[in-house]
Length: 65
Image 1 (cartoon, rainbow, N blue to C red):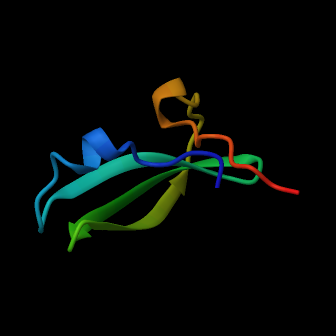
Image 2 (image 1 turned 90 degrees about the horizontal axis):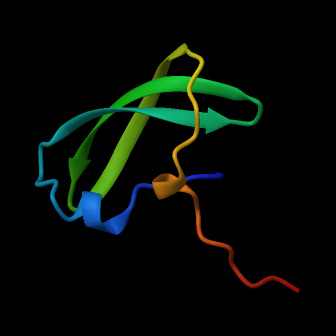
């Protein structure tokens, strides 16, 4: 994935929190809905949508060989 839920935002969510967000899946952007359980987020996309990526959700670069 190219983006991730920021820890600061996840820290505000309690078990049972419902959310709607945008996802980038390859070249397609989609709306997704989901919930939080045990500090984990489960999302399911439900419709394609034109969504601009937000810098705050960009995945941090990781070291690779």
